[in-house]
Image 1 (tube, rainbow, N blue to C red):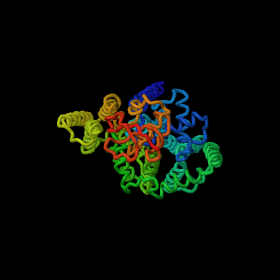
Image 2 (tube, rainbow, N blue to C red; image 1 turned 120 degrees about the vertical axis):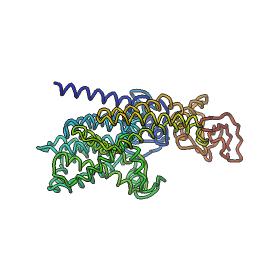
Image 3 (tube, helix red, strand yellow; image 1 turned 30 degrees about the horizontal axis):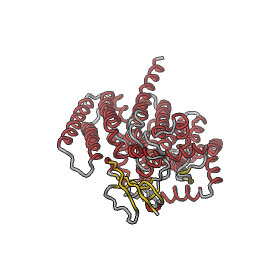
Image 4 (cartoon, helix red, strand yellow; image 1 turned 90 degrees about the horizontal axis):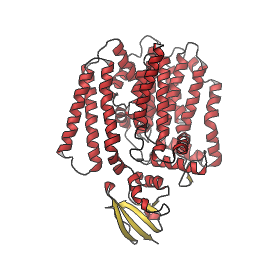
Length: 524
């Protein structure tokens, strides 16, 4: 009975953290970037057409991504209406299911570590950041995490229960519906590399290739791919060849970054557990040749899982931050096991490690304060009073984190880590959200344009893609480029942008936060 009570209490705490980090203030600011409004609009068009197979954007097939996120967004729209925050609900739900799965599966794999593992995953910057976005990265990462943990639960079981292997195939199929063949590809590499560390490597691989599981994978993942190809003959060329093969091997979509790009992305994505995750990874690699045991096998598996997506996408010619999200849960699990093991065995953490951890918390807390000022005035020096405020916040966080960390208790270290994180997240969602909305989203601009009927043609020139696609979602209409616009229409362009000659235009207003001008244009 006490064990059940403890589990209920832990699940309740995890539910509160998931509610705050994943759901609280989902609509505090509008859709940002190019992808969020595009994904949201694609789901809206599928809902309006009652078409659950072909994603479209502006009425044309848009076959860049599979359909799992769109199904979630359509369901969310049906429940809550077409709203920007409803478009973010599928990612938040995916992250919550992932946290619940981590808790339940880690409880089976290493009892006593489940709460730490789930809470550390919940509060990592990459997880709660992508859990709040309308996109495919979080559904992929959640399904992939559940698949990998289910596979290891099968592998480590005394009787190799096939239920866990079936769960692996089911979730890897769902991950394939979330983002494509990258999911089974990464899973296959991780499992193969892990099997090579085992005495009976080929037996592990043969048993993994379980034909009922393969049939389950095909039954879940294949129907949509077959229907998409049948209805859209260009699907294979656009999705498989261009969006997967060409995206990896070329810079077709202009996301080229240096090979080391994912090093800073990983360090930021693991915040606030960065220092401990790196220490845990290093220690696990150092312990690679230790006596074989369940704990050692789990450590090796997590190391391989943590490393493979980072290395794989570092080799890609196209790089975006969300690509390595499937690796983050492995890193956070390593950190949680590392910290709790030391707490249980009274092994103190080195002072330099605690100092680096406190400095990182302080630096990020101060940077959050400065980022808001930079969004408002990106081309102006930061005033001294803002610098002082950011410095004082950083010093306060540094003192709090250092004092609590030095108390040598896992609970105190966790408190000193999570308290600044919760306060920073609350600051962003309550205090900074209007600034983020005004400067990074098209939502307030769309509100300003609400005086014009949605049938009024709108064009853009020289604006960021977040403005172009954001206006398309919030006004639910195609947004043309000015060069191709005809007839009488409304033009949105930066105030200092040279407008094309030969067109009669009347200046009608300005959207100050993003320095955008509005013109009525008569085009022949």
